[in-house]
Length: 68
Image (cartoon, rainbow, N blue to C red; front, side):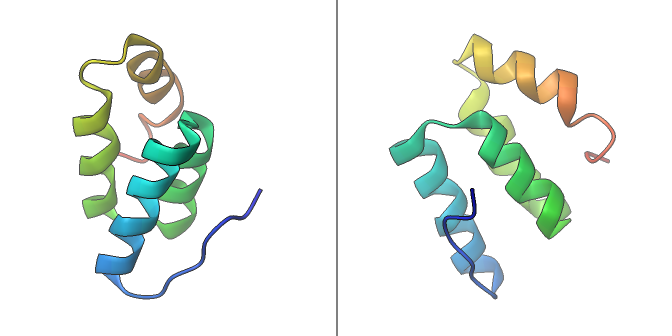
């Protein structure tokens, strides 16, 4: 599901926060970060997942190759 399309970095950060906070959808977060290929975007899911064990599990299982 494509929910939001923004061009600049700040707007992508806002989009990612919306996906986390409103949709609570880690798979969409991972897809968004992977498609945008921005290394700086990965800090948001990492920080937001610290206290969410299900999110951390998905992050570790599916995003390892994208995070450098």
